[in-house]
Amino acid sequence: MKLDKATIAALAEHLESAELQAFDVVKITDSHPEMDWDDAYAIQDEIRRRKLARGARIVGLKCGLTSRAKMKQMGVETPCFGFLADYFTVADGGEVKMSELVHPKVEPEIAFVLKRALKGPGCHVGAVLAATDFVMAGIEIIDSRYRDFKFDLKSVIADNCSSSRFVLGGCAVPVDDLDLRTLGVVMEKNGEAVAIGAGAAVLGHPAAAIAMLANHLGARGEEIPAGTMILSGGVTEAVAVKAGDHVSLRIQSLGSASVKFIE
Image 1 (cartoon, rainbow, N blue to C red):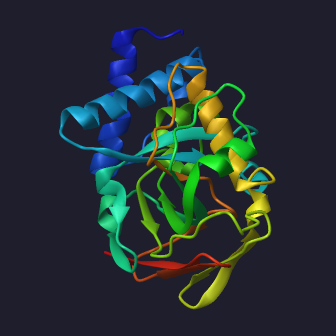
Image 2: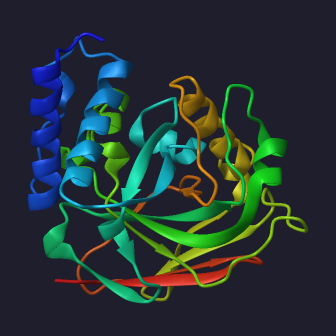
């Protein structure tokens, strides 16, 4: 690590304030080019600690930048990982207030819920599938706090991987008879298709993203607990939204989810 505890705490407060008060900031590596990967996750951990101290709960984890389309869109080459707080949850068919966000975008996700804990190193797709209770259709509303959605990977990790809101569909499907790689995904905005893909767009297999998360946490002496919900990463590029937009997602065999954006 290159940053001291006081700097990590100050940057965490800076980024969380931007999230909570919905204002944008320049990427933090502009002022701290020396920060490393451990610093980035330490800032994210401090943001999580701040939320827990105020009484928030962590209700899930997320994998970010897991599709080649997303990596290309954001100009990065490696996935990242973050957490989901309780107030990020939006009911299927519910509303999201634009006034609470900076410049949100939506992306289609396959969500995993585990029946057994997962821990790396050495976690692989087979271990993930064996530990999975069921999968669901999900929409993640990402909202980077960085101006014009311009950031590098260290900055976005520190910003909890642009996490802000998420929606889960009501259909929970066991993975036993599914080939998650070939599931077709269609996301519509105001009745028009804006993103089309298949599960294989996420690292060749969505479960590969969960395995990478388990290995990432394992290197830190942590595991993914049983019962955890994990968003495996956007299947397609993220799509910008504005007040009045209605977004609906359909994933083959997993049903649908939808959300509306209001002022």
